Amino acid sequence: MISKEIIAEKYKEIQDEITQALEKLDGKATFQEELWEREGGGGGRTRVIQHGNILEKGGVNFSAVHGQLPAPIKKAFGVEEDEFFATGVSIVIHPNNPWVPIIHMNIRYFELNSEIRWFGGGIDLTPHYIQQEDAQYFHRELKAVCDRYKDSFYTDFKAWADNYFFIKHREETRGIGGIFYDKLTPEKAGVSEEEIFNFSCDLGRLFPKVYSELVNRNRDKAFSDREKNWQLLRRGRYVEFNLVYDAGTKFGLETNGRIESILMSLPEQANWFYNFQVEPGSLEEETLSLLKKGVNWV
Image (cartoon, rainbow, N blue to C red; front, side, top):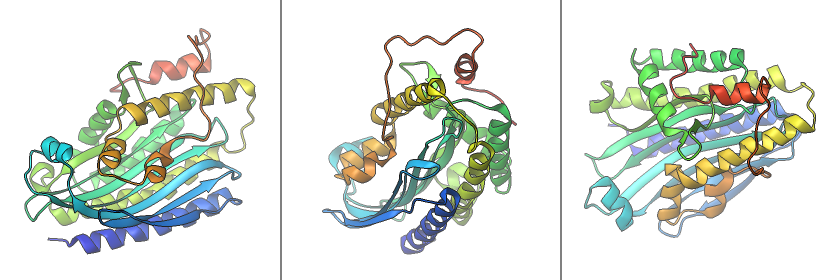
């Protein structure tokens, strides 16, 4: 059994690796760090980058918190125990250029007692304009990590992501998905706890490689007001999902989490156009046509 201290320390290392890689990628902005403590127990390191060459706003957060589990969470989990421990790294990056995608990653570990402990997380991509070669590259890289651990991981976790990152009131996916898993235990996964932990770490270390590639493919592409307005509209969809459906946001709010860290995922700017209609045959229409569950990118 891996100790929660070892898991938390490894996740802190991954936060360091990712922030260093993103600063190098941007070339201008640096992360500002804020150390915080949670009133009920534990704390974290919030790192935010803003107004860079590439990164308009982004956060790479680490937390390790413990304390009393609130009654609504106990009921949702179907448990009686009070003392919980949770640690993880959470990332959201909003770029300046509409041709560069939004990206989100989360790896986390939750422990209630020696019997109730699990891992969750995943990576998903939200392009403002879906470019099929980029989507295929992204999903191939995720599949390669999954395949190192179990043949069924990619298929299962991709479907999970398609279902999870779905904006029901819009009937569209948030982006092109990726992989997502939650409450993963050795019994559910069919692999050891150590392998699940290593899998989560490999996902974390995949992040800078994949996002650097996607940024460098698109960072120098020109854009006009048309593309910028579309980007702001797509950011609005991102906000809708995070505030209405995202489980991590709900958990943070219900466990008296730090508001600035919880809402770090929101963009600096977003728009909502009334009854916006895309032009037939446009790139915007093509993107909407691909915001569906079950698209095979590999």
